[in-house]
Length: 103
Image (cartoon, rainbow, N blue to C red; front, top):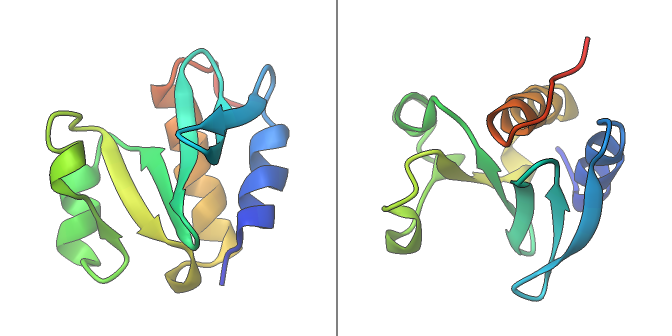
């Protein structure tokens, strides 16, 4: 099970990422927004595979009508993924948000 502290630790490991509030929630920015807590236990990330994620694990990955016009945004229930999967999601989100990626 992943936590907000895991999100924070992983995001801080990416070059140039800063943390600041967005809509009253913790958020992490590379060149653009890469991750934000939507509400307690729910994280917003960017993924080019949003449809596939939600299709294979709809109980873990989803979006709301608010996210319909942003096709890379997907919500993740943190208690349904492990830290390794969270790290992979955040690596992709960092890349999609304009970060150079990491090795």
